[in-house]
Figure 1 (cartoon, rainbow, N blue to C red):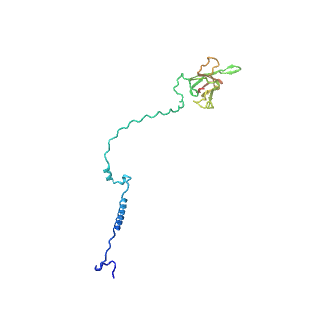
Figure 2: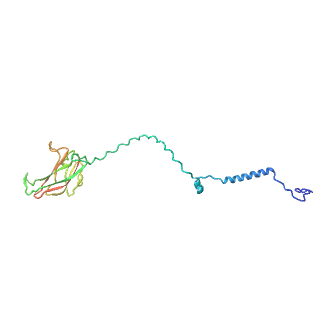
Figure 3: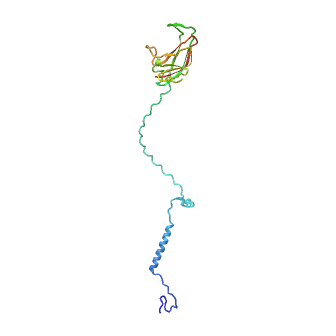
Length: 229
């Protein structure tokens, strides 16, 4: 009986079979495909210099190149639109003695009047002790005179809306802030022209009077403020 795989006269040795050529080609292709994947896996994209060794970076740096030529000047842009006109400024303060005080602006100064009235006299059936008087010349004349009824004598800090305190006066008012007053009634004044030529325009000032109450030492004085009408 013949046993498969044994060669007659071969002293019992087993015969080894070799792979076919097709098998060899298939195995080679499988090896190359596997090694190709392994090689491709070792390649990657460099996205930052941090991935490169500092020693290598030093060798990669070159010398600074020459400065490039200056570019030509660009064309001039078109002129922008004109802006809106600003609001008018405040009136200047460089006033002189000949400059009319602007409407709504104020000026201040001093006034005083005094006299003696030891003896009274009969006047209209009553004893009169006369008057004391003073005049005020404005530093800057005002365009129109202050109406007589707008001349206010203020005493004892009895301020009003028109005369709210020293240095202040409503428009078109003259406020007499009496800091001292004795033996006189509240003062009054004249500034309007009752007859041609009596007062000029612009108005340069006002005349003031205080009626004396009784014998004694009548006087009045303080600070005035006038605001141009």
